[in-house]
Amino acid sequence: MLIAITRKVSPNISQCELSHLERHPIDYENAARQHQEYEQSLVSLGCEVVSLPAEPGLPDSVFVEDAAVVFDELAIITRPGADSRKPEIDSVARALEPYRTLFFIHEPGTMDGGDVLKVGKRIFVGITPRTNLAGIDQMAKILAPYGYSVKSVPVHGCLHLKSAVTQVAENTLLINPAWVERNEFPGMDFIEVHPEEPFAANALLIEGQLIYPSAFVKTRQRLEAHGIRPQTVDASELAKAEGGVTCCSLILKENEPHG
Ligand code: CIR
Image 1 (cartoon, protein in one colour):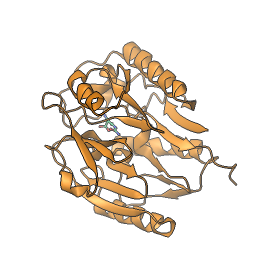
Image 2 (cartoon, rainbow, N blue to C red):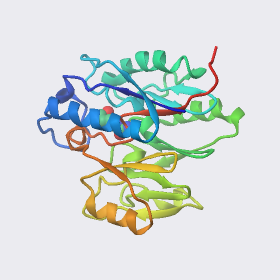
Image 3 (cartoon, rainbow, N blue to C red):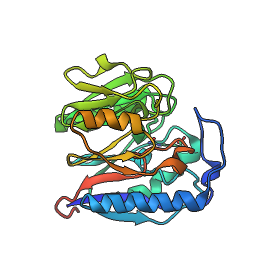
């Protein structure tokens, strides 16, 4: 059984952090409706959705991916790079505690889960304004006993590593080569986003099935040409907050009851 932890959209989503987008009005009702459809997609792919209540005082808290990184053996609670987002970890840690032993990123380390790309036992972590080398080093030490490799990856021009590259099939990455270099990922195959769709690299792979934003029609054609048929969702409202489809959930296998 897979569990997807999500959190309802904050009514103050309009006060979100923005790094690479201009601020446009965000329609809360529309964002909340689209988010609910996203949760339904997760259910249709076989996830049990644990939907946390909205945190009105934390505008970006719908983006639960940034507060933790979950592995089969443990979970790492991050220390988000934006100060406004640091308090988001408390409730995410509480939600994960029944399922995993928790480890924490400590000061001076910072990390957003959006910077962490997991490909089997290979973990790629973007170096960005949100994630620093101290955070990556702490993650590497936590994971070393479990056989994971952790590699830092330079990212330019976008918010997170997973804005630039995500996994879309067993050995295939969907990539925007303007934001991250292919040669950081040796041995992988690549599909490039359509040049008119720079934000199209963020796809959510769940046990071989893909959730993908409906907006990126041209890149979707490229996926389909490779035999990948995603389930599409309208994620346009939260895209104005610089969020994609990976950001809104933490996906974990339900292990034997813990502790
Ligand atoms: C932020 O700037 O932190 C939010 N407005 C967007 C976070 C998106 N998260 C993600 O891509 N993992």
